Length: 376
Image (cartoon, rainbow, N blue to C red; front, side, top):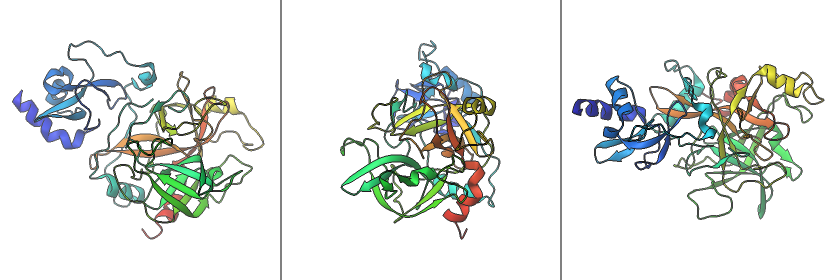
């Protein structure tokens, strides 16, 4: 047993997945997306067996020198009663994407490594917006709010993702609204109704916007834009850029959506950031649902768009979530786990009833890199 424990401690820096502040017997999320209980290592037979096979159990924290692990069984050995909202993730393929060995010539990966190589990025169970759950503090440090109107009455109407210290990735249709052009960006926010929550907001004005050159306001295609902040963001536990996708995303993986948008059709917008697991929808099914229309005459295009719904549950992004991220958690042996923005919330029909449509970020990497890192 002592040998196994020593092996386990050696692996700790490569295997942290749950938040290190979680205490024993609290719920946690395993790499395959299933829910577990934070349990003393010596009481978790599954973790002991995994270490014996040179595996990397997920860490919740420590009790002295002993790790508290995310255990798939309770201490008595009974199966956990998993919530229906996490059943999507009970599959052999988790929502983790594994990179090929590090490539110094890959600009996006190099920038991502610079940010995350010394960061142990935690993940806690999260459930979504319509059919969603309040986000824990510090969980999505790249999440941005986009604001319109005047400084004494800012209207937060879209979302976005911080991808460098100076740029936010969002939807092109979020650059303007009936309240005028985009003026403000807020990072590090959690609960819009209070200033005493566990958050550390940073506010910015918009220095410049970059809609994709092929985007037009009368079309749903190429709905992607970059927003340059008036000053660089400060890296904190609450504010940190996400990474860009480097590979095609397998359809069996489980993405995560988020935002402060409507929590029901015709209802109120969320005060606390809402998050939730979604499921990729096949292009064939999505094209059947959407058909063609004036603003997407060719239907849903696989090259530039991706669809996702609640996977049998009523979960969906909605009005006010536009521009926000569709995220996967990626893993690489050099720098643990990190968030990867694979989609941008673009448009949908009747929130919660059919799949939403997201701009596929992978298709626009060269354009993004030329603007965000022009001299790299």
